[in-house]
Image (cartoon, rainbow, N blue to C red; front, side, top):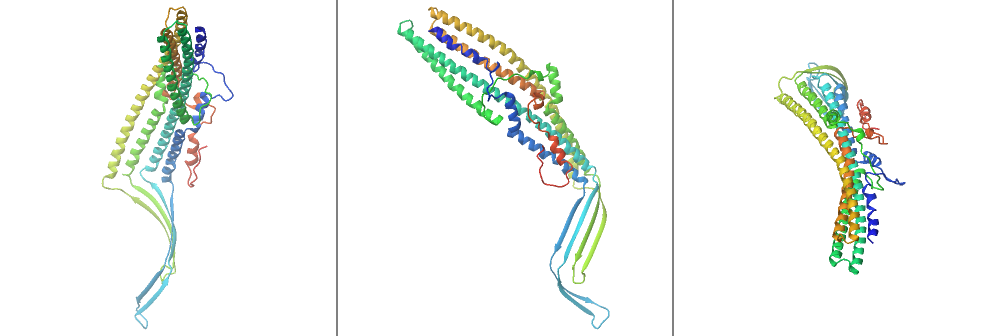
Length: 468
């Protein structure tokens, strides 16, 4: 009967390596690459950030509008009642009375072109372009976060599924153990204490199953939130070490050069520098050219038509505006200093994240070897304890403890295999390389440049291009 329990327990061996080993693909199996593709296409946080980039793109045509003329049209119509008395020098009467009601009508057009405004338009354009580039890097950072979250959610669900199966198999083994213990108690080989110990361990095993089910449901809900669809037949996943730098020093250098948080901070510094020049431009004179054409009809009871056309050049020299311009310049310079500090902070954070991720990956690799050795030793120990218990050299409690140690070792191995894969994705994200192109995902990559070109030189129109 003990051999029968050993046969049931042997089923656990296949499950323990489920996360890291090969799996048979069914017709509806879901891979990690497919899950990452779904997250890249459907995640609402990522789609929201893409919309934010498109909104930032509009800052460039708004800045470029400073180079373009501004044209306005005006028209008015109304009713005018006049009663005039004019003095004349000849005639039968020294006064002439005029009265009547007219409908004055005025319409015209005015065009204004700025010729010089202290280089503010050019600096605003460069600032807007820097903000667009910073927004794209922020989008790239969001993409990395979503892909990492998707990989983590996938591996968490895979781990919790394997652990749930392990705990269910453990309950089957404990049920068989309890049945055998009761049979031996009936024939007087063991005491009531052995039966109670088996019953207690079975109850604990069922409790572990309930906890594993709760963890599984939680991971499935997170998977649905991040990926955008319900999980189905998840298959094994592999680490992505091949895309990461070979050494820690190379990883740190790559992170400082490529990580989107660093590059976004660099573009924010450029935007702040342009803002300083914009603020300084308010101290320069402004030169503009204005032309207008206006026609009036029945503007009074004595004037039936009037036509005016003019072309004016205007020069405005700021002398003193209350000090607001000087305050704006000082404020922009302080903001520039802040952005430079933010850049240093971003580099320090990236370096810390790279070093931490590198250490976690090394630990995960070593942990797998340790847990695999632990599983092998626990299997040998369990088989030995069972044989010794069969000949009366071990107690039922010894068998139960050995069985629990094996289950714990296999749960640890499943967790280590999950950590190994997640750590490889974490390191790839920390150096700024986690992207659909790097992973080779079969998905159209969102190109922010497309929408930018669609709106950059648009003079008119309210239609919003989709950027595709």
